[in-house]
Length: 367
Image (tube, rainbow, N blue to C red; front, side, top):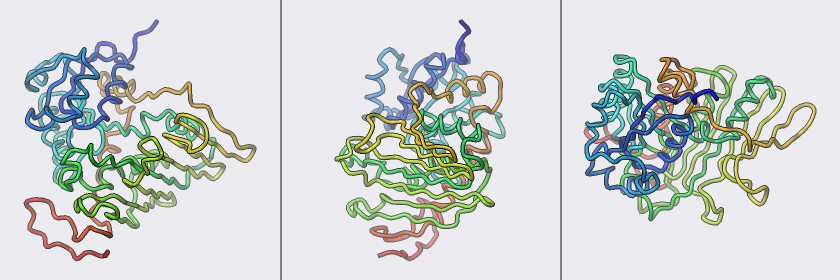
């Protein structure tokens, strides 16, 4: 039996502030890579978070290091995996890339243009890989299947994508930084990043124009920096994209969100129900394909994510098969652009000004 793509590759986990880390771990371990250990990037913050404690309990066989510098200095470690608080990512990238290692993050890559520019500059200087695990595409079997169907021409030329990204807020369980705009970046930068990744990937375009963007706080007046609703319309030549993201999933759904993705081709359509089929089939990963000849439900139970394997090959061969470096940066640029130009409604009383900036607030356009 041939060795798995990750055989011989050692990775470290540095910084855990989100449950995304569990999916990232599974991707790498399933690919055959070896986890060399875990350390907090900042023991005073991510080291004491509830998510970090849950990670250490779930992966109790992983060696815990008191100081991340020991892992960064270990020349046998090729890759660092992290799900640290978004505002800390530029600092982490500087440490990881400066140590000659590749980096895999969950979304978002950056919460400001300053942070993004710093990461881009470091990547260009070092030649190291900076990759983002857009889990709603890369860890979802139905989305992996949709990708294969599109590449095989099942729906013809993709004209439009529509994404729906509702999330369950679980307000009492969230850390303080979740509600601070400077820390999470805004709803478009945060969960909207998934949808921008989807649009660029499935239409095959490299860039897009933000036609309109809106963010709002409708249901959480006690947290004035939280955006609980966002929508964006994009255009790339004659390829269209639209998405809505929110923190309004009703608790009665029983899962974190009824995420759906729609692909319109000139010869057919695909609908992906990523997480749940309300009042329908059990489980997740549902795909409905409609073509000129039939309508059918596509079984995705035998589909497995390949992102971890692709990334391992890229680490070894210095290639870009998991995703191009330009794609990683362009998703972040577009998310930041849409976030910056978004109309602000509801309980958002003024345009957000990052700490240290002297820009005058823009008068709210909403009520």
